[in-house]
Length: 222
Image (tube, rainbow, N blue to C red):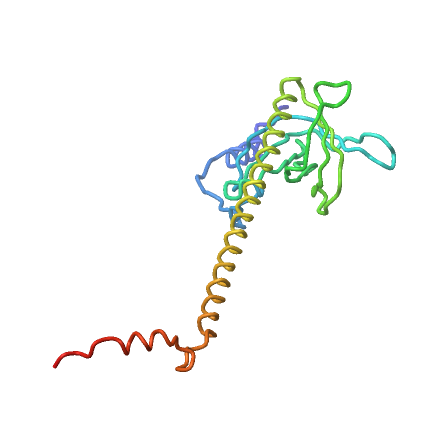
């Protein structure tokens, strides 16, 4: 015989689900308020003149072989105030720095033997937090990218040479000007000293002809 009693348990379950689905409109505020943090990359005062994807290698002298430093983006960054250019490369996934050094007037870049998509150069690198002499090799996806990198790199080297030559020329000109001024002052002091040391003419040393001429002069009329 079927029960005629209502199914209270089923009804209570339905009411519970309805209460869960009901939107009360209440807003829950976060317990901790997080402040926005400005992240500095160190590149804020620099403008990129090269920005390319590449893969970097360094030569391991102990193992006498090339070792990969990472794949990522290589940049040549020019400082807005000093005009100096540095090479910076970060790994794509971790953003870890794998190359960080200035491009100096003494550097040179050349194509890697047997691969026209790669080039090599020597540098004093600071990627690991200390200065190290490194031989780098970088490989690009295309020959065009490699040529662009090499040409821009070499242009920076030449511009640094010109700046140093102009600086040396200006310094030399300033030094010569300073020396000439000092020599002029020395000459003036020598002349003044000679005038001071020149003996005065005494009565005995006067020319007798001058006295005779004075005697022959007619006396003024009264």
